Image (cartoon, rainbow, N blue to C red; front, side):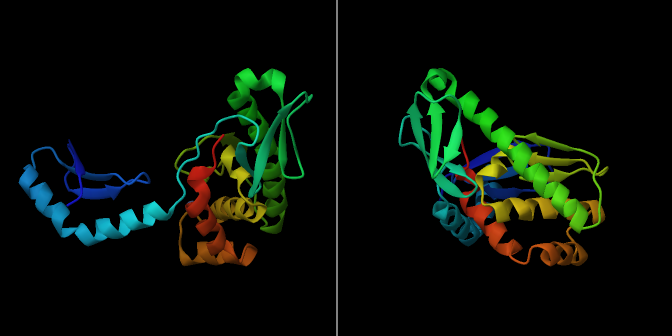
Length: 219
Ligand SMILES: [Zn+2]
């Protein structure tokens, strides 16, 4: 049997979770005896097995060395960090040029760089598809939303993770279309997905890309 972390709280039912890092967590009501929880987990063995197999296929979160040759994602490409006497951060022919005088705060600088690119590229896509989909939105913001790539609030404010700019343009486009479709349909109904498909027929491929690579989109 797998090692399972048991988390008890005031919840009413028991649930199982396999985290992206391969940890199995059972969430159970406060007063449920461990023996019952373990029996429940044992019954779910095949489900756990299948999920552990799935997460083991995903690339692990990349930890960076921040030295020349280190690799980052940019618009779906792996770009190679090149540190030198440059004036500004720049992406050119597969390379990420980085000024050596800013090395002491490289993570901050790269984050700012990606936020700026996200703002340009994603806003541009949003404008384009707002027009094509005959819809409107209230405003747009960028943050590091860990669990979601995009979000559309009930009053049509759009939020995107700036890390999205590391994924291919078509994947960015899918997330933009997904959120704009929510300005028209506030659910994931058939009508919603048919709207998404209408504007990006390859949407399943884009979802897959994010699933497989999402966790390696780091600075
Ligand atoms: Zn949605």
